[in-house]
Length: 496
RNA sequence: GGGCCGGUAGCUCAGUCUGGUCAGAGCAUCGGACUUUUAAUCCGAGUGUCCUGGGUUCGAAUCCCAGCCGGCUCACCA
Image (cartoon, rainbow, N blue to C red; front, side, top):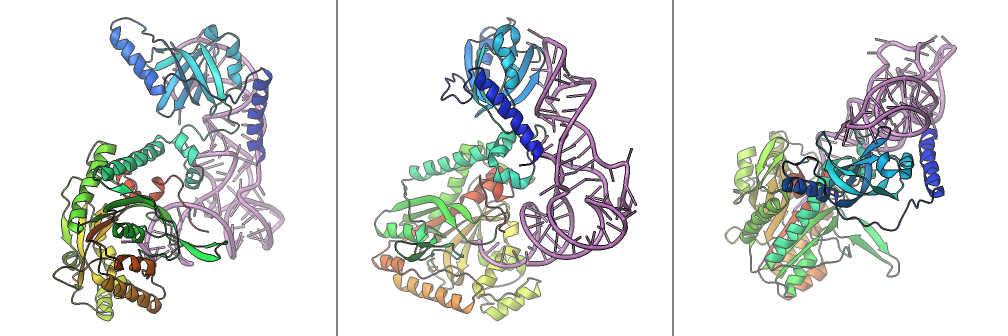
């Protein structure tokens, strides 16, 4: 620790000792709070409404508690603002009211937690204020808070020491609360539709159900390599096989890939599977889900994202993937149906196709570069080529395509859904193709063959509509933030 | 991994181009004044591995080289 930092802490440690010497417990076990800051202020509003016209309305005595975030000593009177989970409220300490204990205030600092008791009144500048008759130290802080005006701007510190960010930035706290409420709303929505929430393993033997590089670990007692799951998909479908007809999981998945503004190595998804449904049913569910969540959490179906108003009201347009790609790039992927022709057509419009890639990999890049950025208002891209979608069921009338859609908002993919492939013979072939692709394109991720999953669906899986929705990205939309780190409390920082 | 930008007091930053009163400001801290302030105000004080290590120079926060850390961005990655 640097010398001045040490000095600042020593000053506080000395105050701590003085308080102890004066018989004050700086870390009491509990406090009887009667009102939050907001409740105290509301109480005054109410008192004023009841005694309209009278001067100096005063409430009954309340006890509030919180952290000192501002401190204005004025001789024989002192103002302090305390902040609790619902906001801030001002305290007025007067020597006339406090006697001996007024002098002890000098050993308090910004950052300390305190409780205060007294009536609420309004100062002449109009601020609801607790006129303190009695106060209690609740916790002495021995380190100081960030600068009061600019707050904490160092990005790394904001995320590594999120608690400081939450103290200093109302916006950060607001986003954290919003996320929690959104997930509650999501749960209510799913439960309301008769879905059952489950938990499936995070440690898996085969990291399947998506295309991603997994985190590897090792179980000592079993002497076995295990992976952190990259998706919840295959276990949830096994529950569909088991007869749980509507099932979902909200949970963390892990991908050992790049860290950037829209990617965190661990992120939260909600996957759901519904027997007897197909992807058109899921589309309807997704737009209702997002709309309902927005209404619940934001009180509105409209959010502002970087200056653009985004309207989440259903229905969202269904855009045919094949048509959209052709419209944006001029490329017809059903014609350019081999690697060389697709690659040359992409190169012709200036896309970088230098890396060795499969046909599906190329098409994915084409989609990301030419179509996705245009999908600012919520929309669904519908019907993907079979090569990109090893877990989706082929279209009824075109075996080159599968019944799959992805939902986009603000140019970001937020969900992915299929009519699930339940033909075990077809599924085995598709997984085998994925394994072949991986050996052929070493740089490229593919899905993996999971024998336990294949065994499960060989026992009979009903027609099923499945969904995976990226909660973090949806929260970015709700929060109007372009960085995933703004909506994850403790994001992974750039890898070393 | 590439490119660009950055790292100076606990926090927010100026100073670097043009080397030498450049170790600075505000907040915070400490002492003092003040009984309705709210970025309180006023008077006074202390505070540094100028990211690290080399180099150039009489002299480096400043210039050069290497490294570390961070941000943005491109690539990669659904």
